[in-house]
Length: 286
Image (cartoon, rainbow, N blue to C red; front, side, top):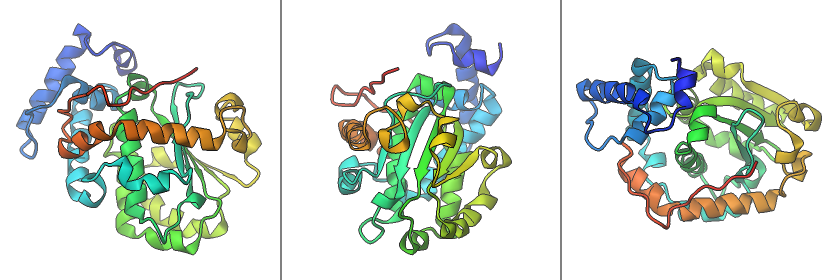
């Protein structure tokens, strides 16, 4: 059975057990990581992200752990309430409905981020929190995510926050350090002076990710609809879905309800966390 078919099986399927056991044994032999506390659900995130190739899944898991250790300024505080002011600006949301392929759709509105008030590390922390939450969804493990970045309002202040070190950390998450398949990156309203930052990021990205980057410009409605059905998009992006304020508030509430879970993940990045009644149960439509 190939990786795509294995991904469709439920977590408790007997057919998945040899892969889970194989990855756990490989982790035991890896000198830099202990297998203690590694749940089957945690290991399955990495297996699904690499189509059940155990060696590639191990490499991804080790990269994830290494990235977390080397980026404490981002990963050690996964507290939505600590960046609530930024979330309340309608900077970020995860659309309620998935796209045609079943991918989760993330939306970032860069102009809502005031770099005088919020550092790039805090902004990146929001992305990490969202990624940790949606990576627990089985459908997202199977179908991955697509991200829309609205660059209207991009300024020199934003550009100065993105240095080569941070660019490398961002590219690592997109390519080989997080258990989610990035199916597409869509840029809208990108200004000319965003290009130097993109040029800084590009060398760190694998060809597969480069081929999935789409620039739509200011007149983006028609081309964006080639990838996303209008019924899932907010009206501000030519769609018929919930408005951007409602969509952002909904996802902010989801993150706040997941505060305990996220803080456990920050403390125990191997996935040995306990879900409590206060933790968010992600709800979707469509």
